[in-house]
Image (cartoon, rainbow over all chains, first blue to last red; front, side, top):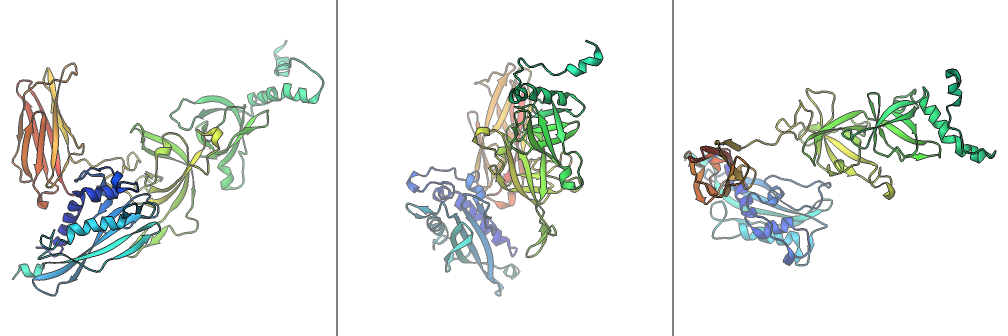
Length: 165
Length: 350
């Protein structure tokens, strides 16, 4: 398996899982402040939330108005073992500060919770060997008007060197 | 009256002559201006209401400040014409030269006056209303100031040219928002593309009384020419949309079948399903409810299943990233109508 193929697949699988999740799509697209009154936005690959979930490290510019995003950034933490390498997928929840306060809590917190339900499952991981662990996460301000979460998930994948053994 | 003496009596005679100066002014003022308009000082100009696609109004006008010593003044004029003609945002065509009414016109009870800006460039784009190619002359100023035109990023330098663009306000131009891209360059081999970063419809509006008039000011920055989407020949950005699939129809003598991709994009994501509707129309364009057809397709690793339910065909793709980018063709054939329709779908990613 090529060295970075797993990176592509991790992001791919996460984006697919996010777009299939009704709560996440609703939280990304609805602009009201009450989750109970949110409309169900279309899920799947044709969802309007497609463009709000980016498989690269994206931070909206201040001219990007009224939008919420989930973006990703990968890291390979170490690969000195011939067989296994440790990778991190850092997930960013980026919310417009004008829309972040919902009656049920912070929009960013609610999205982060839904993402954690997908990735931090223990028994049946979305990708990786053995499981995905949540590293220390923190809330950050990305740009003027945009706040949210930076959440690194760590997993083990097969290393390219191991394929030759 | 002889021909020679006619010119001395061109003014319309007033209905009264009280002897007071104010009455004389009202009686002769506008007629006097009309006389000047008709003389060699005046010009025949065409006035377009905020788009060159509108039918122009042909009027006489006086264009002032034609001679100047500095470049910036050579692109500014004053126009004088009869009261009630000018509006901010109109185009004025004097010969082949296009100007834009950039100020709120007003009058001194004899004539109406406004400031004209020379439209330095024309931009072409696909109308957000009709989808057709439209062209708008614009006035622009370079707002890069004394920058080099380059901005150093972490690993590369990118173009950093900035302009302020002024375009008439109308129902079409107000639809062009942030991220709208257009080409503005004399170089047609390697043209420069600009992206709108701020739309200001307020600073050059002329008030609630003139709600339909005014200019829109755009701040634009240089961006990259996109070989996939932008057209050098047409000098239009975002001219092409990605062509990933389509429909091919072979009509019969009495009827033709049509396929409709209910998603409308001809892309099927891995692991997902897409519905295709089969419609049939007779020679008069009436839709037929009852007709028989068969579905044919070549075996394709990318496709998991093809199921037919009445006039709906459901195609499901395998959930395997190796198939992303492949295409799949499906044919619908009706022997009784001697008609055939095919659809090409591309396997896409999430």
